[in-house]
Image (cartoon, rainbow, N blue to C red; front, side, top):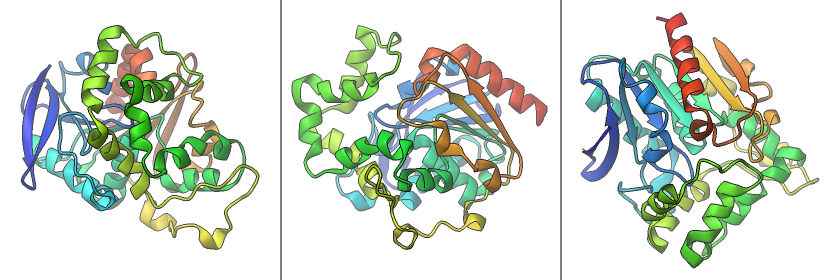
Length: 298
């Protein structure tokens, strides 16, 4: 694996890259509180046959970290991802866009708004905005599990998260999930990626820019107060694989209930013995599932 720098709209973005130029492109989009290293265990299993590219998305890692919330609205994030595809695969769409956590929001957005850039969509423990908004607004189990979002959106939260060598961010990782993969070397790599208050503020601005509404437990959000999410604008037309670590304590299975209503060709594979950090826990298995899915559609 190698690191490369790509200029997008005059700003510097960091890329983790493996594989041969000209091979079919797999674009990997990480979530919070990770960076391109989220895919460091997975990519070696795929780089022999694909050009694998994992950017530090804006606000993360060694990429550009603007400080205002408006810089993290979905069209801006999609512009970044589309530019990466155009650079590494100028003559063909990405063979697949692979999203995890917040990276799934960008991956789904590409599928909705730029379907010509995406041959296949693969999501690992990430959510489509339609089913997820319904679950977050219902006041039930997913609402309870998502209360951390309100906390992360709160003003000044970045100061709390950098205290004590980012102890509170590691608590987010640890919450009722298997962290046996988090070595001391990885802890230091994450701490370098998160940086100071400005770095953490940039990461939190993803939450602050989202229009999705979160209920209080037992107090559903009235339908008229929810954002307009028409199904025809949220359609996944290309083949779509959802991989789901069943022990995820942050995103529950109800967060993808009804996903099939938005998709033309959906495959769901529920994975036992894994949770939200499935990419770190079972990278060889995830790679095998990705290869099998893509082979069926080649």
